Image 1: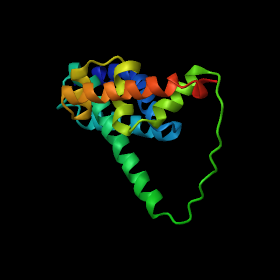
Image 2 (image 1 turned 90 degrees about the horizontal axis):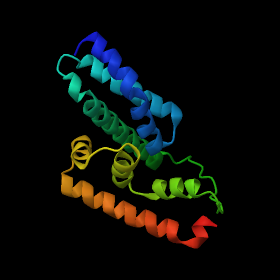
Image 3 (image 1 turned 45 degrees about the vertical axis):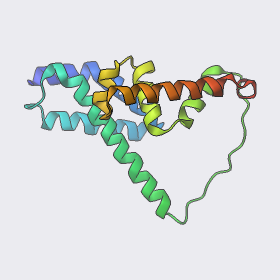
Image 4 (image 1 turned 120 degrees about the vertical axis):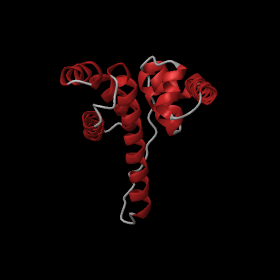
Length: 161
């Protein structure tokens, strides 16, 4: 990959990678860091990456970096005895988009990732399988289960009103 191709990749894919990561972790600063790390890894490995495979490489790298971050956060929260948990209050939403975001956030991390890659970013099952290191039937199952959960969650009238 040349410097020009790298710059094209930054211009073309940075926003999509950022939105994907932000939808998953909901932390703007951490999402920016993960995107930055992904592009840094692309730069370091630019000689080994074919320009046509850049998008897949970036999403795969960002996804794996995000998973590492989530795992690290879980370890920190489990060992942190001084953690103060905020009380959770029940909100009644009339905005379906907010209900959908809440429902998506309730999905498991792998279901959330595959559903975001498929329905928000428009990736094929094969591309999602490559990014997440799953096979295509597993991706289809996770997407199906996530959609069923979302349908049931949104279908409950008390969640929408």
